[in-house]
Image (tube, rainbow, N blue to C red; front, side):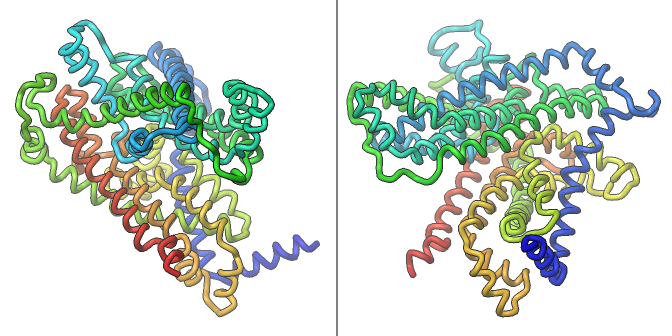
Length: 571
C-alpha cells in the first residue's frame, strides 16, 4: 500500500513538471529513432523479402551459402576467443605486478603510459607499426634480421595487434579489483605456511574469477566488433566486420549486408548480456568495499626482478610500437635508417592531401558532438539515479545498448534506415550524407561511456541536497543546472573529453556513412594505409595523436585547478 502511494506521488510530481516530461519524451524519441530504429530495420531487411512472399529466411540462407561469410564467422570467433584470453592474461599480469610487487618509478611510469596510449590513439595505430617493424620491408625483420619471406598479415597479425590494443583495458579493470582485496585474507594463508603461488591460486584467483570473466567478455566483444585492425593487417583473412563492409561497398548488396550485420549483432549482444547482467552482478557481490589497510608490496628479489623485467620490457615494447608511428612519418623511405629526417610527409598532408580540411572537419564535428554527448549522458544518469518513472528502465537499457552494437552494424543500420527516410517515407532523409548523421553516430557511440560515469558520480550525492532546492521553489531544470551538474562537474568534463577523443578517432561506423563532402582523419589514415602509403598515414596519425593527447592533458589540468575536488580542497 505504501509503495503504491509513493509511486502515485512520484507520478504526480513528474506530471506537474513540464520540463522533466518534455526531457523524457525527447530522450525516448532520440533513443528510439537513432538506436532502436536502425537495429529494427536491419531485422526487417533480414527477414522480409517482398519478392519471396514476405517473411522468409531466404536472405540468411543466401549469405550462409557464401563460403567467405561462413569462414568469416569462424575466423571472427577464433580471433575473439584468443584475443580475449591473451588480453586477460597479460592485463592480469601487469595489474598484479603493479599492486603486489615493489616496482621502481620507471616501470610504474611505463605502466601509466601504457594505460593511457590506447585512449588517445586511433584504433589502428598498432597495425601500422606492426607492418613497418615486422612486415616484408620491416625495419626489424628485413633490415636487422635479414628475413624476406615473412608476413604479418592474417590471423596472427590481427591477434597480436588486438591483444596489444585491448590488454590495457583489462589491466585497468584488474588494478581496481586487486586493490579492493583485503590483504589480511592472503596474509592469513601465508601465515599458515602456503607459498605465494598457492595463495594466488587458492585465495586471490577465486576472488578475481568474476572479474576475469568480465575482462574476457569485454575484450572478446571489442575484438569481434573491431573493423580497423582486420582491415589493415588482416590481408585475405576475413572477419565479420570487414566482410560486412565489403558486402555493402564492393558487392552493393545492402540486404545481404544487413543480414550479416544481424549475425554479428546477435553474437555481441549475447556476450554483452552475459557480461552486464551476470558477471557484473557477481563481481559486485564478491568484491565489496575497500581493503582495510595498505598492502605490503613483495620485495623479494627472486620475485621482483623477473616480474619487473618481464612487464617493463613488455610495456617498453608497446610504447615502441606507438612511437614507431611518428618516427615513420619523419623518414623519406621507411626502413632506410641512415637517411636524414624529413618533414616531407607532413608537408604533403597539408599541400596535396587536403590535411587542413580533414583536420577541420574531424575537429569541428567532434567538437559539436562532445558537449551534446556529455550533456545527454548526465541527463540520462540523472533520470536513472534520481527519478522514478515507468520509462526509466527503457532509457537506461537502450542508452547502454549502443555499447554492444559494433560500429559496422550501426553504420549499415543507418544506411538502411535513413537513405530513403524513416520507414521509406522520406522523413529525415535529409540527414543522410550530411554532417548531422555523423554527429549523431558520434553521440550514440560515446553515450554509454558517459552514462556509466555519470551514474557512478550521481550515486554518491545525497538526494536531500536536491530536495532542499525543490523546497525553495526551483524547477527540475534549475535544480539540475545549479545543484546537480556543478556537483558532478568532474564527470561531466571527463565525459566531454572522452566523447571528443572517441569521436575524432572513430572509424567503423562513419566509414560507411561519410561522403566526399567531408574528409575525416581516420578515414584518410585507413585509405593511405590500404594503399601502402605508410609515410602519409603515419603523418596523419601522428597529428591526430597529438590532438587527442593534448585534449586529455588539458582536461586533467582543468579538473585539477577548477574541478569539484579542487573546490572541496580549498574549502
